[in-house]
Amino acid sequence: MRGVVQRVSEASVFVGGARVAAIGRGLLVLVGVGRGDTQADVDLVADKIVNLRVFPDEKGQMNQSLGEVGGELLVVSQFTLLGDCRKGRRPRYADAAPPEEAPVDGPPAPHRSAGAGGRVSGTDAGSTRERRSRHPPPR
View 1: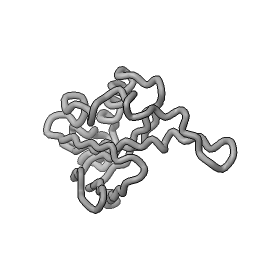
View 2: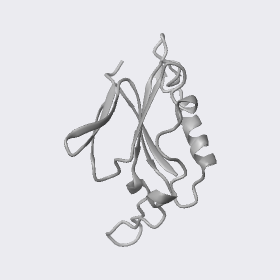
View 3: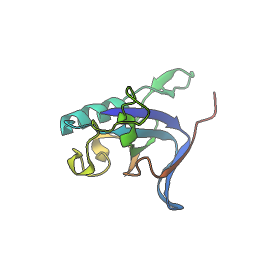
View 4: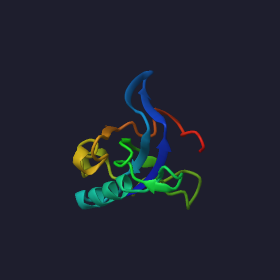
């Protein structure tokens, strides 16, 4: 499993011009699920992500987690994160799990994701769909 976590002031996923998911302040997570990844792997990564202390506290220190700030979580399936470009010029995706082998059916459950007051959104937008996000303003 491979992921990219981005702190955002807002993020949306558009498919065919229609918005299919959106969040306010929180984390946008692109996740590539690999062959052999299990539900235990998903649980471990989800717990790690929602407890990352990447939001500033009242002193400006990166000391608060997603749940502590009441942030939202947008999880986007992104198999291209598992592309292997070591040989040749065409990425190889043999290590990416096909959709039917994904260990979860949809976004993480709210009890193990955004925490109290948070909201979870998820999509299987993958690499062929448009993503738009904005970083939070510098502090």
